[in-house]
Image 1 (cartoon, chains in turn red, orange, cyan):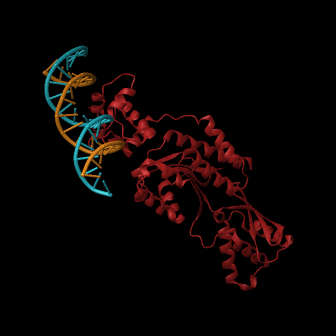
Image 2: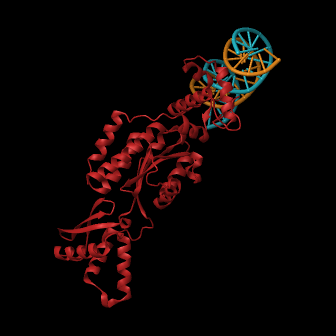
Image 3: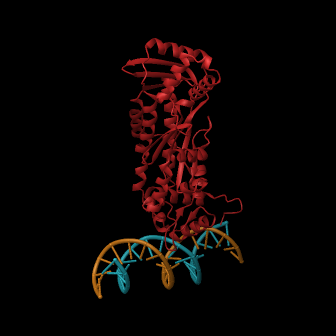
Length: 353
DNA sequence: TCTGTCTACAGTGTCGTATT
DNA sequence: AATACGACACTGTAGACAGA
């Protein structure tokens, strides 16, 4: 056998491993030597293939669920496949059309994020997620308030990264458009480049320090903040958009209720999920698509899953992450292409604004 | 002689069906 | 519902053969 200390695989071993992984990804069933032999053009006998499979198993790339079963890839096998054997493909036309159609029909920031996670889950049949810094943490370039009528105000926030976000808030107090314009002007002059959360906290602190400096404009801003602009009770620094958890129910490897229970328990608390994703991802701008396979994940409840993610950036600002969460048996080439395409699409949407 | 590959065969686990 | 049974798929191993 060729598997020496450096664990390098020869051409034939690589071919067999690739064929096994492709077949397993397609069928979800352990792959036997006879099936593989029939599929091959060079007509290697099943016995020869079995010898190679035994070598690959010994080296940790494959595993046998039971004595008389075929082989299934291990996480190490998937990692080798992703790093060395995967051929990057172009996004197929129907996927591209579906994604374009789904994402470009929206305008507000929230709906784009929601639509991205929905689109990913629909097109890949896995869980799609988007993590973005919460509104309260965005660095402010410009803020505007528009009086919409009976106690409703439209808030337009332009963040430093160029992102435009609109949010309608309801207020108990009466504000005239003039009040709102003055407040916006005050905030823009004094707090440009700061996060909404910082501004709110800073203003509160100043108000507490010296009541004499209590300013009507500051009071207005605090009132506006408390009406839904910043989620005060949230422990989270990010907003998370997630869609498609139910897709996993149909996957054969998740038919055992224990695995499903473990997954949904993880999803129960969004804050826990964000912590997990943050720990797993550590996305950095310019890093490109990142893949974490099964046991490479440090969280025990996530070791049956793979994560494919990419940082969302605009003008060197990190705006969060987008990605796919699914079983380790995943169409990696397609998933990577889709995440990459959506990341670029997101950049186009920001540039268009 | 050594290595790689082949055929043949016995052993094992799974799955569907019949029986109790 | 539990058990028994046969068909099937898959494995590992022994021994034969060909080529370097």
